[in-house]
Length: 355
Image (cartoon, rainbow, N blue to C red; front, side, top):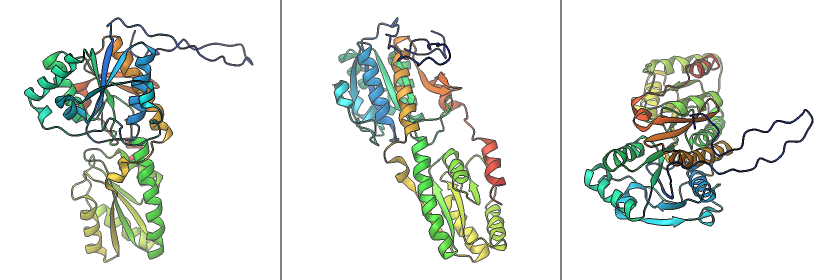
């Protein structure tokens, strides 16, 4: 099946104008790879929607007659042999939950060849034919080396709020993180205007400014600082001074955590130069929590389904993603080697609308 084809779905029905659309009939997907049992794990930082992806993996595999082994605590648990069979009822009532029911962890042991060999041995003991890794670039590194060193077919599912993986328009958890941060910005704008204060708000994004940029536009921020652009803090000072001259009661400045100096550095420079009352709010890990919004649930469901089909088709060492309305496949190493830029049009828009 060629990339971009519909996975496991009947062809779209056509109807004469005015006829009601009939319910599509699920059909079984080809399984030339002969997959009988897959394993799934979540690794690295948790992201809202991971549970929806796990649920989709389990239920898609079950529909196709494939068993699923859940690995608890990511690669750390795989190294220790924390594996268990999962069925459809094990993932019931999880799609709306934040975090990950399989738990997650970061593993220094997995960074060693010996640690990966131990994990591969556990997969062989459980007769696993392929591994689905839900996580970010660090998790994909782990899956990539497992496949290279031990021949275990690995498919990645992009689960990270930073939206910084090349090869997919959006990552699982990103939409919810933006909504969580935006809700906080709206509240801080109220108190900032009441006290005529400047709020410098730091959002997550160690290497990417996607969250910061979306929140800045949606929250009506006066300025935004992202790692992709090394503009000086003096820009924020000029914006604040201009806002005061225009009679604005308060200003909101969004800073991605990866911007040099972070929110505290920006705030210190503003207060030192202008003498205006400035407050810093670092939103931190609150952006990872909470019930996933509908967009994350849908994305996770589609990508979880696609990851099972990818293994059945014999694909390996790739990440499934969404692009141009369809499923995409990107070699795992490209997801971190190639750069995913922020939307420059949106960046321009943020500046235009801050007047």
